[in-house]
Length: 289
Image (cartoon, rainbow, N blue to C red; front, side, top):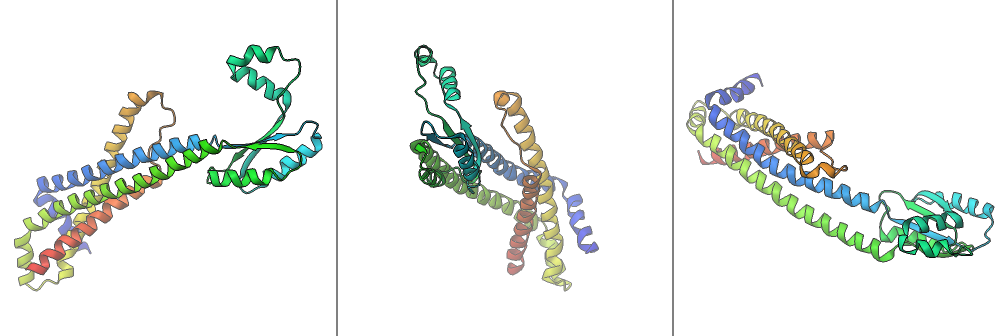
């Protein structure tokens, strides 16, 4: 293992320019892929922020006893889809309407009696903010005898579901395309390194070196270049992210960068690409000599 490590490190010293170009090619490939996934991460985060507004509102019949509402709220809070349940009284509903519906503020000020009913506002947990789960909760709420009407913005929630499903499909397709292009570029880069050392491989073959022994330094060399390329790509992604935040994205408070696990995954991805690219390139060359 020490010999393999020494040979891999020696290849960096033998051809520093080619090694630097290889690392740069890997970094560029991972950088473009990383930028795409960073964009996807923030788009998904924005969609989740919108999905947090999905709620089910149950309007209560007038005269429903407070004890009944309290017990029902506790029961509804135990639903697996439900995050919170908030009771909104008739007076609170009127105050909200006066504050939010400015065009009707004067009309609300002149009311002799309050026409708005009390209600229960139910927010859903993450993973249940879809039209399917909202409809299921609404159906169960409709079974309570003191609930007059249930609303959850059916059309809006269904439209949000369609957008999320389409976005997920597009992200998967484009993400896969970026990954395949990155693998191709890195494979070609490592292939150039193998061809540069073709004479050395032939000599090792002549003196009786096994395929495993010949592959070892190249595989480790590819892994090291993958790690270095991944680190450089992460640095470039961070610089791009910070530059965007300082400029165009200054007003976007919800922008996110990769988490620690995301960055580790990117480094592992770079390492694996280096390993696979080395194995494939060296394997092809060994079959030809």
